[in-house]
Length: 147
Image (cartoon, rainbow, N blue to C red; front, side, top):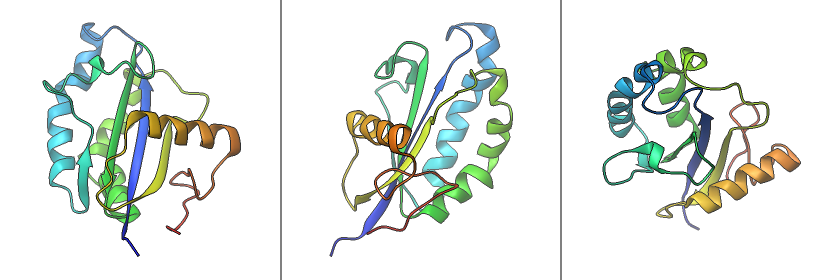
């Protein structure tokens, strides 16, 4: 049986244009937070593009920024999200991003070595939005063990 790893996607909708000075507080921190993730215990992989211009990823629409990564387990991801400098940036997110009404973050288990694609992540997010948390697509608040 293959070992499982945890994939995650979260999306945010910017309040302002990417070049608006009000967004600089977020973008000025992005390299440091990404480096922190890369070095975090349990980190496996994160979505990247050539010049790390996350705004160039328009899969979810203009103004939406996706973040997708893979972790060894749920505890590793929780440690990074809630007990690192990432938590400080999350506390400021209302300055830069719209309040999302529906689910904007989804977790799911993948086979070790699998690299998720945005289409796959979008399907998991849609599943969560339509059916609520399940073994196929879940949240931090209602997580499921790998099957």
